[in-house]
Length: 141
Image (cartoon, rainbow, N blue to C red; front, side):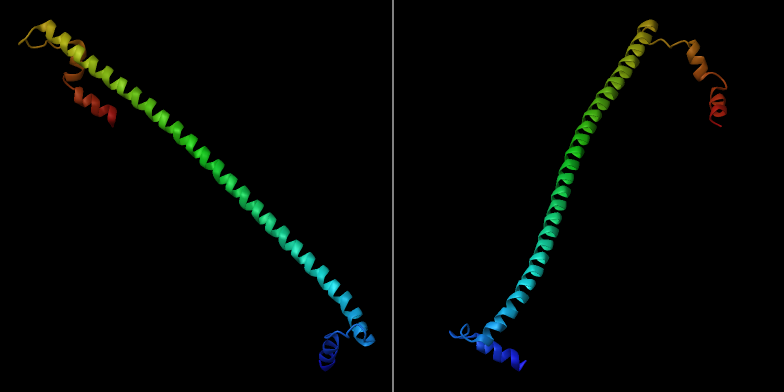
């Protein structure tokens, strides 16, 4: 260690190149420094390459997220359209059923006149006839 301090002291100052011993020390240190420089450059390139691949992976993941968001938005718009179609279809079916009920009710009132009781029809006997509830229970059980 004392040798290193004396050689470092010899390197300092304007006469370091005029001293042959100091020049020899420099000649030994230069290849060592060049080798260290090569090792450090290789490590730096590895780090740069790793950072680049990390950034590329991050960019790819962001692209995937954006693409998936677009797919989700498209799917939600499809669902909304289908819901509107279903709502319209169900509304039409309800209105049609209501019109049918009103029409049948109007037909029955006009046939029997106001204040007259309706005579049971064939379909009414099946629904209101004797044993109708028993038949319904037999089917259920």
